[in-house]
Image 1: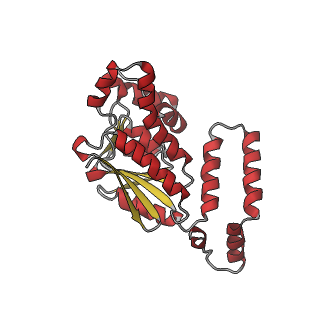
Image 2: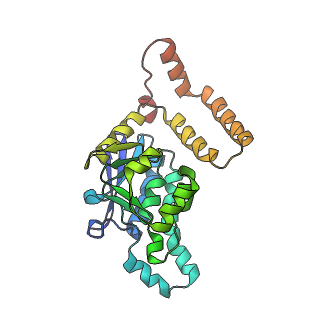
Image 3: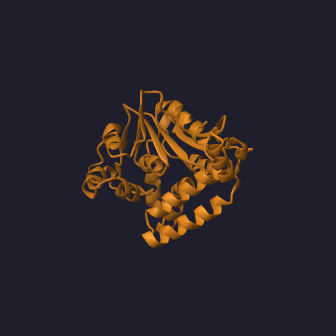
Amino acid sequence: MSGVLVERHGPVVKIINNNPAARNALSFAFSTGATEALKAAGEDKTVAAVVLCGAEGFFCAGGDLNVLIKRREMAVPDRLEAIEVLHGLIRAIRACPKPVIAAVEGGAAGAGAPLALACDMIVAAEDSYFAVNYLRVGLAPDGGSTTFLAEALPRQLANEIIMFGDKVPVDRLHQFGVINRLTAPGQAEAVAQEIGERINKVGPEAIAAAKRLNLAARSNSLADQLDLEAMAMAESQGGAESGEGISAFLEKRRADFTKFRK
């Protein structure tokens, strides 16, 4: 059945785009189901991280053109409402207090590219690619494509990727730091799981604060960011996680932050 599958693997929740017959093209069922799963993971203390991936070796082919062509008959307000389903998912990835890791096999094309780029980290198979290919079918980019590429790449390269829509090999993106890990084909999900398990060893409040601060730093002035960091630091200094971490350091033992995920 197409839609979304949600699996639990230890401290990691895996959200799978399950539409393999269409190379995991985006569907209403996936976008809404994944949004709900992210909210649930964010509220579950036992979850350390989320892995976002596609079924049967392909991350996401983007929007389903058979669906998009029907939107030509819709009024603009109705089109905006439909687009908001994808944008709600992008917002949910950013709002989730748990790190979200994209595991890219095959390709991340069209809206599949910003879906991966919205995540906090990206693991990609060496033979996979990204393609922001909206313009090839006469469409303007959405899903945060322009924001994420502007954050990560020089303007000229972002223009090339968006305006030509060519397949961009992940090793080129890895050179710019857009991809965190390159893996052998078929191993992206396993490596993403390993990263999630490593995150489980860090305090959940500290992780959530770090994600929140990193996102804010993109748009804040230095003065505003220093204020946010000061408040986060002041709050964390009195928290249980810093009590464990500092005590462990002074006692020359490994801190156990897993107790805060129970």
